[in-house]
Image 1 (cartoon, helix red, strand yellow):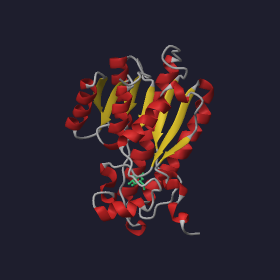
Image 2 (tube, rainbow, N blue to C red):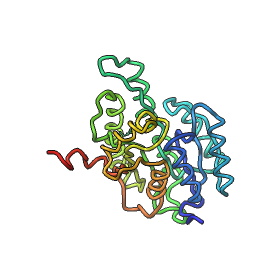
Image 3 (cartoon, protein in one colour):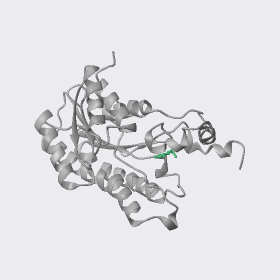
Image 4 (tube, rainbow, N blue to C red):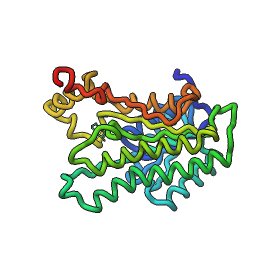
Length: 268
Ligand code: BGC
């Protein structure tokens, strides 16, 4: 049985009905947290995540909110405080890609990526921080007043042609996270980023769903495997727990070595 490091704590995971968010939700649930499965569409998939966490002996609810919509985010936090009393952990995960050649990129593609990947993180973090400060530290639950985990990407440092909107948003997440860590360190709110490389989820199906695509992906990954959501879930639990109490303002890369630039193993 998994150690219950997060017992009694409540974690909101945005975009938790698929991919990396779903993986984080299972790991946090197994670690004893009450997990809020935020979703924007496909309620049945959110309910399936809730059911699975409950079947494994955990607590979870599904709450719909578009993270880029201020009123909906505020309403989600109200609902969570009503059900679980407070919020201890925010996994700012919801994010998307709208890829295009730069000269063909539409304003709608640019705006949607910025609205979800950046404004969404801002709105959710703001509500989380207000709630952390209202509640204060509860020493028997955690040494910190609250923990925010921002889902970034290797593309917060690796430039990405044909994905300029996405890479720009993740570069923004890096500064967003670090500035928050600086502003709230003295109030014992820890803010960190997880920077995944290629993880097998619906966002990057084209990168792994044929043997050719997977082979070509492996030329970018020294460790020679694609990641899975559970890899990220384990790191989210670590960053949410007091095991990482001295870590704030950090971007942790979890990428099978993608950021060590495998091309240089034989070149340069
Ligand atoms: C992107 C994926 C991509 C991975 C590595 C992620 O942030 O969402 O589509 O496979 O970075 O390039």
